[in-house]
Amino acid sequence: MLIEFKNIFVEREGRLILGDLSLSLSERRIGIMGPNGSGKSTFIRLINGLLLPKTGQICVDGLDTRLEVEKIRRKVGFVFQNPDNQIVFPIVSEDIEFGLKRRIPEPKMRHQRMLEALDQLGVLHLQDRSIHTLSGGERQLVALAGVLATTPEILVFDEPTTQLDLRLRNRFEQHLSALPQPALIVSHDLELMRTMDRVLVIVEGRLAFDGVPADATAWYRTHCG
Amino acid sequence: MLKTKDLVLVALFTAMIIVLGLIPPVPVPWVPVPITLQTFGVMLAGLILGPWRGGLVVLTYVLIAMLGIPVLPGGRAGLAVLAGPTGGFLLGMIPGAVITGWLAGALPRGELAHAPQGWKAVAPQVLRCWVASVIGGLLVVYAVGIPWLATVTGMGLNKAAWAVVVFLPGDLLKALVASIVAQRVRRLGMI
Amino acid sequence: MGSFYFPGDSWLHRTAAGVKLLLLMLAGAGLMWVHDWRILLLVLLGVLLLVQQSGARLQQVWLYLKTLSWLVIILILYTAFAQTPLGALEVGLRIYALLLGALLVSMTTSIAQMMEVLIWLLRPFHQLGWVNSERVALVFGLTLRLIPELTVQWQDIREAQAARGLKANPFTMGVPMLLRTLRRAQDIADALDARQ
Image (cartoon, rainbow over all chains, first blue to last red; front, top):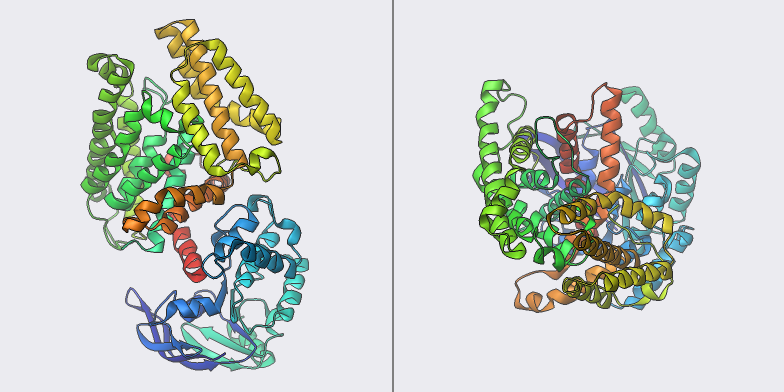
């Protein structure tokens, strides 16, 4: 799957947030790092059209985010930093099934898909639980299950391990490596970045570094530490 | 027309009114009766979200209650409430929020820290919000509620009006607090 | 407090949501005409029996009733004063019967099920093009979902303000609550849009 950024400029209230970005992403595991406020969250929100650039074009698998955003959103599974914002229904199974409504009209198949997604992450037992009773890590897995249930072709994660303790963080890394789809991951987690194929460093709205994890993290440590 | 964010805001503010409505009345010094926070939430919705979204918020509130979910103060719900003595006050809140939002005026856009902060600069806006809240959150609500109360209980307009007058000081105070809070939030233009 | 629902397998849980809501509505309307306290008492006991059947934890139910009783007590006292003690008994029994009934329905019907009923009710309007049932249902579901969240948010902000030495009043609490709410709205909207 190819994601292309062509001469992107993103502005908000007259301020330049991301400037003059042009690149192509096709690797299986891509990491995105950068100091807070550097524009990384803006960057990934361009991919599924949550934000549109002032000038320039973003193409996901050949589809322009300005023109065919619905098709793109069906391909891109976006996992947000705070699972509470992502989960609409209090009961786990209902939330996941709700997310599938448009793609799978048949209720029984939806139910089946939901069970599979939960099972994939080892949280089938949380099926009937109310999300208010779940821990932060469990909620994150439920949110991820909801996204995986929609069988996305590519995944985007916004700071997935920031709120997890060490044990859950390691579990997440395991799950991540088992996922067949390509994934883009925004994170501060330098250890996680080491497992990537390619790492982008965004500083003050510009692409400051683009390369292999070892070099990228070294650069990051020197310039942003 | 209505973006996803608007729908989410409506849901959030409706939830807020529900939570406020379920809090038992608060006794306040100098005020004859403990004040309920339900109309406080309604005023805030009108002042911060404007007439259309504010009206939608209260409409959603009433509809959820009509579905039978115990979200009204005291955990009440259902058509029985509408048919009862307080039904008019509840319904009156819908146009009330719309009028409050309308009178409070267009939301100031993006006036951040550089806008004048002083007492004198802020007072006219607070005053406008207060007038809007009193007319919408009080007068309109009473205008619908009192006749309804009179009819349902057979009290007669006069008695009904007197029964409600005791809430007036508390409501006026509520409107003032809502205006001060709303004004501060409105200025930050995140809406 | 907003989502009373708890998953379960009782026959009440399995009854169709539409049926439960309709019965609740009819009961609400019908009981207004009943003026015999003995019948109302029977109804109340009947509802209590149903609550037991649903498998609900009685402790929870008792807690809900306690928190919500302030208004009932006021209404009972008012009726005793303005009319007769017997009238007050009637009012009390009726209110509690309806309250428990509404609670029962909420406890045995999930939000998704209620939304299905709503969508069904709106179908004629949806077909006329007046409303988009899906969006309406979404707003309802979100509202109920957010009620407990707001309560938690309230407690969080109260703690934060207390740590700064500020007491809880509408000014110290109101503005932070509203700002946080507004910020969340954008995040939740993004998540919903991304889901498409």
